[in-house]
Amino acid sequence: MPRNIVAMVLSLALSLCCALTRADGGGATDQRFVVDIELQTLDQFNLLMRRAEQLLLSGKVQQQGEAAVVFVLHGPVLRSLVRQNYAANRETVDIAARLSALEVIDVKACRTWMGGHGVAEGDLQPFVETVSYGPAEVERLVKQDNYLYF
Image (cartoon, rainbow, N blue to C red; front, side, top):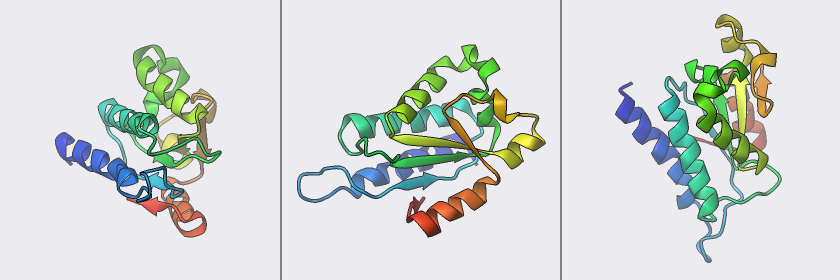
């Protein structure tokens, strides 16, 4: 998929959070979202992180004890979250860690993808949770926990 189309899709997807706010004052919604996109570049991931940060700063999402957006990652962008690559990816890791600590996002990594690409669980940043198989985790979040899939 061409890079500019992916960026537009990602931006549009996170914009759904804004569209689903309550009509009585535009407060934050209780709805939670899952993003399941095989990100190929760090720029794509940065775009998502910046958009999630803007949703927090604008009050569209709040710190509620459970993340409003879950990123289930299975693709080359996972390498940016490897501890040994921190210096090269500091900005991305820092914003993802901050948003995770603020309970705006959860970042989950697919162990199946990691195993096939030589990424060990212990190599990931501490805020990244692993799941056995990314697509199954997305399906679980949608069916069991009523996340919206986009």
